[in-house]
Length: 294
Image (cartoon, rainbow, N blue to C red; front, side):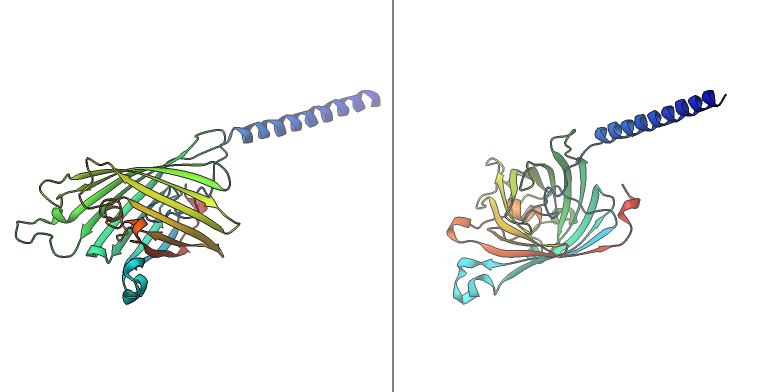
């Protein structure tokens, strides 16, 4: 009897042990099925002038100051541009881990803007090869009308921008982004000008050290829609990580800071010294637990 009982215990323990092994194997297989998402494709929500595919985490508030000086080639009389300044003050908030919104006010043309940005697709090792983020913004000029002699409406002050931000993190050190863009003016600057300006942007990030990376960004306006007298926006800059924050320093030929301004109204020639030095300063506050939102 004791022999049979011992055999029964042995069989039961072997079966339980085997079941545990099967459970562990199933758990590993399920783990392998879950997407391994790419993270930190870029270190901030901006490249230099324009947005990156990154969004704020849920419950995070970003208080942001964007500042750029005048042209460097204005010489010593303007202290190489430091006597002049263009500024944008903004509040930006993560609604979820994939959706963020923001509002800002620029000193350039006294413009107020608001935007929304949603991450549609996320790059994953065993999934999508790229991350795709949809971006849309609206801008309102609050200064005098461009032509006060004509009949003006509030809608005449407004313009809009729409972008698809498509990026891939190729390695831990290199990421590339494409930005097909359209800027719509409710009222074109002149009767013979288009209401829509189309552009293709390209940007990238190259990690130079553990805390420093170099960014580059260029917007090519489609010639048939480009406004006369404007040039394509170019920016070169650096991201510096310090204590969980990212400081962005950059050089650009664009005076304006929102999408309408830098995509369609850049007039400087970067290679002739029409270069602004600028920076972004941001301070983030966690207003709610991001783990409670998707």
